[in-house]
Image 1 (cartoon, one colour):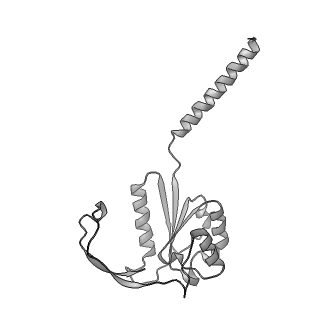
Image 2 (cartoon, helix red, strand yellow):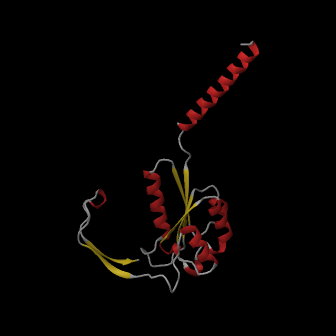
Image 3 (cartoon, helix red, strand yellow):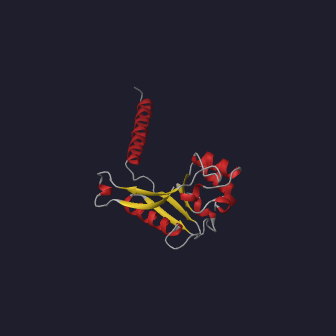
Length: 182
């Protein structure tokens, strides 16, 4: 084998081995931190009912305490005054009242941009209620459905749980009744 071919073969082998080593090291690195942004709606009910901000704070704290590599941010008022905080989020969670005052309605363009980038969207409780038309069509596309006034059903009933399943999460929970809003 000629010396130039030998050197070229050695250089090629070294490059392949080095690239393989770096790709292997990359596979063992910590996964990137996941960023979850909570958008808490304005207060709308009596104290202790539909506590958007408190609910978001509790969920954010529990996610961060129990999931490695998760960073949560909670914003009050339904929509952040600086919507650039939504950029770079892996998921946005909206817990707010819906209807015509839904916090995302005036920001459909920004929402569409985020969804096109693959950002996740979670809507809690009345966060799924938007008016029929463009907002409803967008939510149907993004979430797979939405609550439509005068079409969807919002039942209230007394849920009575007499027998709870045997599971670590129900350990110590006695049978109970609760006024449930579906």
